[in-house]
Structure formats: C-alpha cells, structure tokens
Image (cartoon, rainbow, N blue to C red):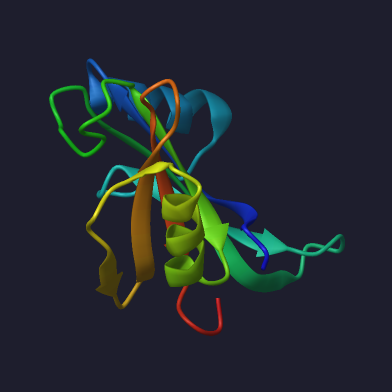
Length: 128
C-alpha cells in the first residue's frame, strides 16, 4: 500500500492574514483569491496542465483549524486510500483523530505527529 503520494496543500496562520496575503501577492506574484489562498494547477515539463492541484492558504492566527495542534502551520498530504492508511496508522500506535470528512473535495483524515503537529491526509476525488 502506498502511503503519501504528494503534497496537497500548505496552510499557515498569520497575525495579520490580509496583509501577509497582500505581501505574497505583490512580491511573489501568488494569485491570492478571496478565500485566502490559491490552488496551483500541476503542469508537465512543457507547462501543459495535468490532473492535480496544490493548495496554498493563509488563515487567521485566531483560527482553530489546526487544533489540537498549537502549530502555526499544517501540511496536507495526498494519499491513495485514506481509510486503509488510517487503519494502518492506528495499528502502528499513531495518534489518529477519529473524524474523517467525506466531501466533494475528497476524503480528509488527520494524525498528530510525535511533536504535536496536526497532519492532514487527503484522498482526492476520482480524477484529481
């Protein structure tokens, strides 16, 4: 069974999220959308679009989306079979959160690493 197959997203908190988003947009050219981030579409070596995206997003430092972690970031890893991986991680004694979300965006689960960082596991919907 494959475990992680790539990075699906990078999420981090900021004291002044709108100002930091503007900085990234102005100085690094990131096309920050109204929801606070962007989705980078994957391309091949010639720049042709491929199936898949990587999300980049800045949220408010007051948000609790990374709870129970106290970290200011969370990385979302792509996986092929979320339910199978969560089962194996539990069997290996990992701190896997009970909740699994299933939405139009795919399936999401979470594990806490040994340093207390919340790690998001994402099984994209078919075709992504």
